[in-house]
Length: 422
Image (tube, rainbow, N blue to C red; front, side, top):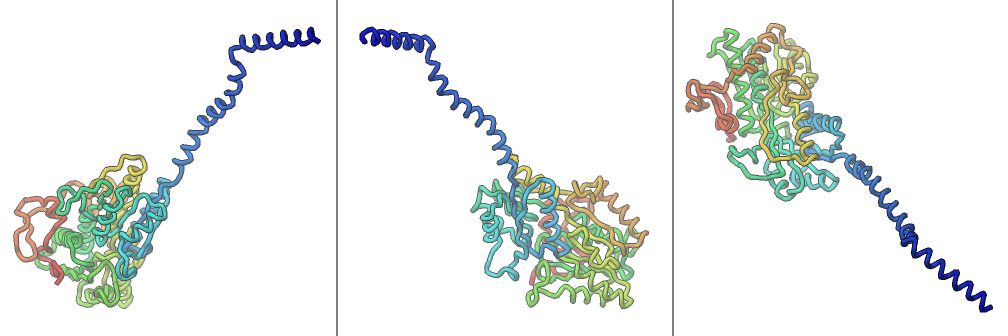
């Protein structure tokens, strides 16, 4: 027995020496699974990152009117769809964001709802929402904000306020309105043009005035007596009809058409003037109209539509949302001109003009010449230009600054209508 135990002791000692000589290989063997798991995790990490990156960017949009209004709000809604198609983003929206349809709520409160649903960027789509967009942007510095038509972050503007998360985007629709005025002047036989205005502010004054400048230029270009042109603006009080609050735009249109204003230019958010023109044309009256905002607005009544200046927000929204996604965002004031190489290019031009079926072929040719002149540098915002009360605004040969156009204080001499709310 003593010999057996001795042999066992020798064997045990030999085994210990062998293990010692192996330099701790068992410990390395125990660590191998952990290393394998780490390697696997490292391999899977990019896939996880890609999955996170693949999650769609969610943006919200507040529309002042119905999403399918055939005008301003639909142009924004379609732009949101353009963003979804081009970026794989997801749009949330609330329409009819106005005091009549949503009493007791404010746009900034409604923007909170969009953020609660996952929106990382919110578009406020109406000048009527400017104050609310400022309130929201300040309260949510981590949410990107686009204010369509505002001037809050314009360093040369009257209300500049640094807000790193807010960008203003607006198209130079002044050009589109000049085209609308030109088409109206060419089509009018009575030389009396009506302008259906919304509410009165800087934006609506300068756009109505731009339509007048275009009408005046083409009226005279066609050989018309400058004194024979009449251009009247009637403001309804909001961007669209609110029964009991605004003037009825259908009635205003009818008042124009039945007092020899044979062309009515819409400055409101929908083309109701075309519907009234179509009724009167069916009765034998030679009338027509110009729509606004939405590229397909003439479809409301093509037989009387001579054209539509429209906004194409999609490309600029794609640029802004891309910058929010990739971290290159910067607060800016963007007042973008049409793409003069092709004003109707859906991927490049923020402002376009679609000629309507009711525009005569000869008039369409003259309008095309006018557009070519604008593309070549023709500036109708140059003196001499007087304000409605006769005050000199631009001296002979003086070109208006952006500030003089944006903040036009009155309608222009030669225009009939109110320059400020009574």
